[in-house]
Image (cartoon, rainbow, N blue to C red; front, side, top):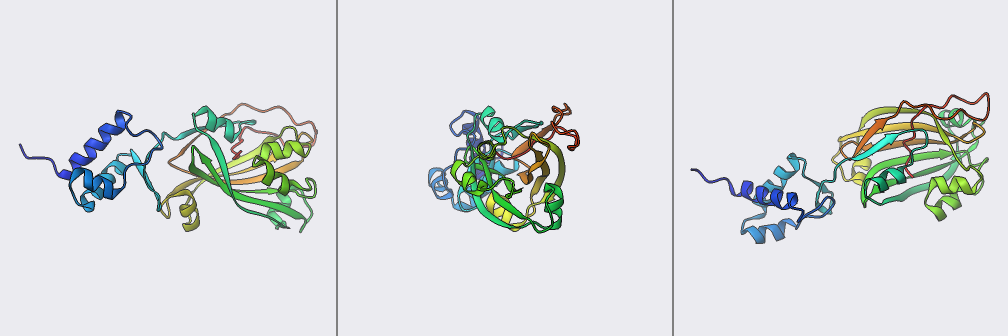
Length: 257
């Protein structure tokens, strides 16, 4: 019987060790050099074995960081009061956020319309990366009507939580007026932030959050890594807004908290 190629034997060994729990979801595998020493082969052979594991969906590489055991996709239900932190903790992982940008500038026409602001009114732009268990899962850009929420930028820096920051500014709760989901290819910048290859699929959410008075408090754009998040849409209606002329509220909270 012909012997299996060496790279295949290495891949099978590592796959068995993953199955046995020697390497768990989110764990980093040994480096190519370490595996080459262990199996007495060159790094090209190890690279072939690691590629096979990636093709089977068992691992993924992070640019400049190594190869990691792939965790099951984060099950992310979309509902009127769902919060990112709750979903991440429910999966047994810890939520976190890395801020990329926090600035106040004049709103463009689309932002002003969504947030019910006058043209050119100041808007707070908050951009960052959301993480689950230390792994980046989404890129987000949120827009806030800063004139209605003065000092929110400082509060966001202090609390690192949008929900808590809004609560401190008198928004005890908020619901989603609408959520639009589309698919996009990752840009070069997004790929670097999310440890993806250029052009890999992203799930984009554009959503509007309303305060108890029915006025917009946030418009959020979120790009989820397509292989790390499974979005589940709930069709259950949320509670009606307090204001009679507010936009109807539909299920669809996909914000990063």
